Amino acid sequence: MPRIHVIGALVYDLVFNIPDWIEPNRAVHASRVTLSPGGKALNQAAAARLLGADVALIGCVGDDLFGAQMLRELRNIGLNIDHVITLDSARTSLASIVVKDMVPGFIGAPDASRKIGAGDIDKALRNLHKDDLLLTDFEIPQELVHYALALARNAGATTLLNPAPFFTRDAFLFEYLHLVDVIIPNKFEAQLIAGDDSDDLDLLARRLLNMGIRQVLMTLGEDGCVLYDGERKLEQSAFKVPVVDTTGASDAFVGAYALAMIKGWPGQRALKFATAAAGLACGKHGTMSSLPRLRAVNSLLRAGGK
Image: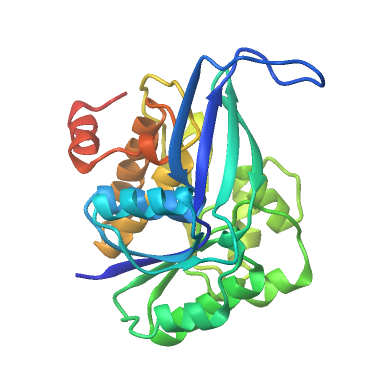
């Protein structure tokens, strides 16, 4: 079975649901607190694994309580963590996520997650096959993103980039975008990469495709998503489901779409599957704790969910 290799940050998330945004010298009491493994790479890897994919995660944690708990939970869902490195010289990266009215804000404290190096990636991808898929994001330095994409392209594997969190639009970015088979930005990230604040999605997609990217899949929150593949354009509306916390939705979408890609599903089926997974993730609190299993996604698809 083809494998999805995911490179990026492993972060332990503390999610606080709050009635008001925090202000200086003022205490806000949370109505709910959820502790869960997180980080974009971990969430996306877990999302694909819970949906039935063979997934290997590549990254670093600290030799501490949070790292140990994270690895236990990843083993419990059957995720391959042979190339997750435990470092005694760094602490596990943490994130405090505050959610008000279903809108999240983030405070990051990265450490071990940023310690992965090119040698670690080279070792992890040594046996990459042409039917495999590499998924990465911007929670690791762009030099490593470039390195991993080049290794995957040389091996004939499919490459998938989620350009988040997006920090800066510099010249180096455009040195490796041609190595990307599929990019999954939201509209804001697409605008930043394209260097254009236009709301014209077709224009933004054309600019990204002209950079050598083969497919552009733009996520649009409650408006669903749209896929651009050359001259072909496919749209998928969001599922109408109860929403309590949108924190893990985008990662659920990316992980589900990665699974659909290695299974070779046609575009519309893949979009519908990924959108259903994202919708279900909005119905639970937390990040990894909100990710749906295959049975739940298939049940929503059978029901229509609209």
